Image (cartoon, rainbow, N blue to C red; front, side, top):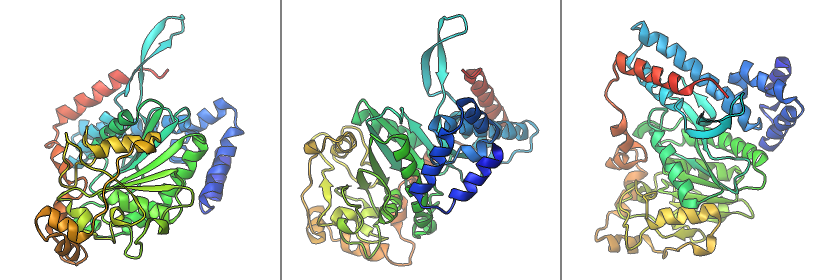
Length: 412
């Protein structure tokens, strides 16, 4: 069976995304459940990231990948051979192995007991910068699914804030919603990488294939693909390659492409593109480093950012609780489109007058220049640098590993 899996992976690698995930889905449907589970447990590195494979098998495979990485790093820390980066990564992996919550189950004696519910990963790459795709909720029963693509400076250590954001999006959208944090690409780290489209061009086909796999797992769900900051650049590139979704939402975009000036150029037929109106002081959006901000497109559905309770300023606040932008995100994800509040369309000159300054025009010039400019400070993810703790001690990481192993307990 392992040989059949190897042949399948080799065969689908260069196929169109829909055909590839279809063949993978057919392969696993043909296997007895015990055989499929054994394959996931014996070949986790192959099954874990495989689009089209059943999510339950991928969750199990990626859990095993994390456990193996934890054991390897724990041994290095215990022997005092671990580097600073390895100690930090062990703390991160210990967190990823913490249960997401509890559920009731029945033990061998028929008694109802509480058991841990592990976090659900469709991809984990514990080496180097790291990648991960995390699911919150049940993809198979969800009526609505939100896929969040984070922006720059999100590595495995700093992406934890995106998991919190996805949880809040799910709560805003309401019951029947599942959310996905798609850090399935190596996000740019730092201004130099963020000024390039190399990461987004590499990410686009990966996101397209993921979306095809998601459609196989949840054929009846309405899927909203959300790109924030550089993640909006990734989603835009994927849209140009016809990434599958029902609705697309872009926030704080640095631009899609210099040649793209309308939603019609990038939106697949039968779908809708939404963009959050730019907040005051969102230097990333106004700089339009990678092309016109989709929020300025004449045919985009431009949603309101502010309300009487919350006024958004800068680049980091579009998902703030109780803001009009976050309320609108929930409405879009659950399909309550008639309730969306729309923002007025304004020209760059009008926006400059509203702000009481003429910085919008010069920012566009700076954003498209080769000079390193201060707008880098507000790119998505930079604020999370402050959440990275100081160097963890050997005692700290060993204790966190022991806690993780104690709470995990035997698999049920």
